[in-house]
Image (cartoon, rainbow, N blue to C red; front, side, top):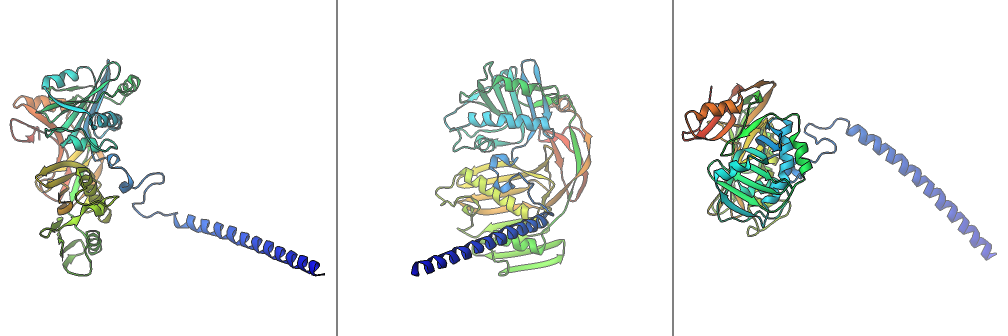
Amino acid sequence: MKHRAFERVKTICITLLTVSMLVLAVIYIGGARFSADGTAIKTASLPEGAVVLGEDPPQALPIYQKELLPVSFAGIRYGSAGGGAYGSEQAAAALLEFAAEPMHLCLSQGAALTAVSAADYATAATGNFICLNFLSALPYQMLYALTGEGTAAAGSDTAISADRVLLSFTASGKTTLYLSDGISFYAADSGITVKPSELAAMANDSRLADFSVTENGIALSAAAPYAPKISLSTASLDAAQYAEVLTLLGYNPEAGISAASVAEDDFTGTAVAPHGTVRASGYALTYTAARDSGIAISNFLDIAKSELDIDMYDILQASISLAEQLRAIAPAALGGEGKMFLRGFYREEDVFTVVLGLYTDGIEICGGTYPYFAEIQVQNGMFVSVHFLFAALTKNSYSGALFPSLWQYNYAANSAAVDTLRLYYRAEELPAENLDPSWYFTGEKAEEVVTE
C-alpha cells in the first residue's frame, strides 16, 4: 500500500511539472514574439546619424579605414594600358585601395629606405607603376599607419615626408616604392610582389583618362576635374553641446563654468579645472592645459597605457578619436558635410603636433580664416593644447568643370619651377558662399593661384 501511494504521488508530481513546463513554454514563446514585434516598432525609425545596417560605426573602424589619407590624383600604367583620375572619382579610390597594401608592406619594419635622385624617380615613371598624389606631405610613418594594420614602420635616421608616392613594378610584379615631397626622393624595397593580372585589370579601367608624371612626381591629366561649389557658414556650440564637450574632456558641466549665451546660435563659455581651461567661442573650441597637467590620451585609446608606453601611433589614434567624438557631439559646427583628413604630424623635442584638415571631393578647404580643421598638441602622454575651428560646410548639388591640371601646370611652369600643384577651396573669410576651387602651385615663388 505504501508503494502504491508513493507511485501515485510521483505520478502527480510528474504531471504537475509537465503542465508547468508547457505553461512556461507558452509564456516564453509569446513573450519573445511580443518582444520581437516591439523591437521592430522601435527600430522602424532610426535616429539621425545611425550607422547603416552592415557597416561599422566610424570609431569602431581601424584607423587605416577612416579615409584619413585622401588622394588628389591617382594613376596607373601597365604595358600600353592605364590612365588616371582625380580624387573625387571612384576610379581614384579604387587605385588607392589597391595600392594601400603593397605601399604599407614596403614601409614595414625591415624594409630599407634609401635616398635616390629625381632621375631615378622619373625613370620609374616610365615603366609599370601606380602613382598617388596626396593632399599634404606626411612622415612616412604616418603613410604606413594609414595604409594598413601593423606594429612598426621601417626605421630611418632621416626625417622623410612625402605627398606623392609611386609604386614601380617589374614584369613579375616585384614592387619598389618611391616617395617624394617634390624636392627629396627616396625608395623603399621590401621584396614584395603583386599579381600582374591584377595590375592589368586595374589599368584597363574604362573610367581612367590619359595622364603623365613630371620628373618630381606631379601627376597631370588632360581631363577636366569636376567639383561642386561649397559654402562655409559660421557656427558655434549650443549650451547642451558645450556641456557634452565638457563631460568628454573630464569637466563637471555644472561646476566652475562661466558662460554667457548671447543667442541660441552664438554660445560662448569658459570652464576651469585643475587640469586646464576650456573655451568655446563663436569661431573655435580651445583647450589649454594647466602647468604640468593635461588630459590623458589613454582615455581615448582602446587600451589604457602609461605615458612611458605611448608612441606616435597612439598619439595619432587618440587625436583622431578625440576629433571623432567632438564631431559626434556637434557635427554641423565641426565640418558639416566636409570630411576629416590627416594634414600634418610633427615633433619638436618632446611635443607632438597633429594637424587635421577638412576636405571634400579630394580638395582641401583652407585659407586665412580657416587654416586647418584642428591642431592638437601632445606632451608626456597628455593633450596639452586642443584647437578646433568651427565652420559648417554644405555642398551644391551641381558639379562644374575646371581647367585640367596639365594645362594649369604648363601655364605655371612658364614662370617658375613647380614643386606642387593642387586644387584648394580658399576660405579667406567666413561666411563664404558658392566657393569654387582654384589651382595653386608652390615652387621658386611663394604659393599663389595659377589662374583666377
